[in-house]
Length: 163
Image (cartoon, rainbow, N blue to C red; front, side):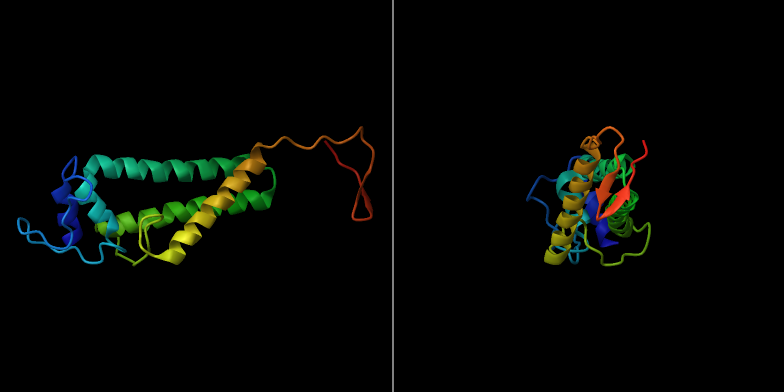
């Protein structure tokens, strides 16, 4: 319930960066527990307001959309599955946190990507982004041109490439 009060206190434009009082507010008399970890979204909602949270969710949406677009564009099936799964994982993390803070679903204690204080979570999310960037780069590179239909030796086995 305290997270909803924190989100409501921010209003449309928020109180301003650094001006939120998530620990205790004399005016509103609420304490937001675990504002560094689980409820960081509610703490940000108090400081940057509804418009700021909408922009933050739009950034997450763009990252997930670009990951799914890379999954569609890459040529190998493993890259498709990996990029799709990584993009879905990031989107699911955001959905679970935002849903838990807004009481849409039960809160799980999962960290918000790139915002929460967890060091291993932050490292895992950066590795997720690095893998998505690598897959996206591989999808944008041109296909290596093959010589005029001659069989190609791969690991000692004659293989023909069909176009």
